[in-house]
View 1: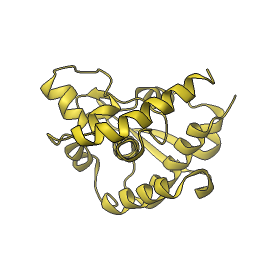
View 2: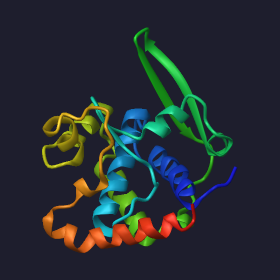
View 3: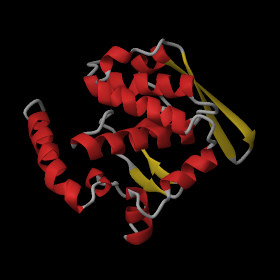
View 4: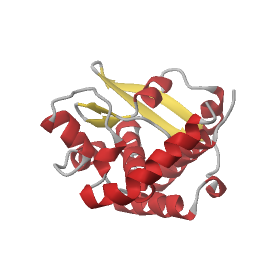
Length: 184
């Protein structure tokens, strides 16, 4: 399996958030990754993990990662342990525990700053509070799910930008996408 830089960052971000926040189960983790990617995009025109997020009822969900929790890839299994528990018959919980040490060398200084800022901001938040934080009217999930009514649709990263940011960040995002397309 070819491991790319985004994948390394994703796995290390999971390790980081699990070690630096309490009750970092599936829902909270997904929201932390969403904030990491969308806040980084807002500053640079690119995400950290390369994940695509979808507007699900409880907020943004990286659908590919959600599916992988049921059948993790070998690199995921090396770094992260997942335990499925069912406290109630209709409720599944994924307990996510890091097995590896966090490797800060895969991140830029900006990415590290965002990781630490988010872990500080949401250190003690539970899943319900994280869901609430992603549902704010000014955020991309709200625009897709509530305003546009496009439930279960992709959340465009561009929705993280206001009009003035679009002028400066959008060209960077286009340049980054063009660069990536050269390697496909």
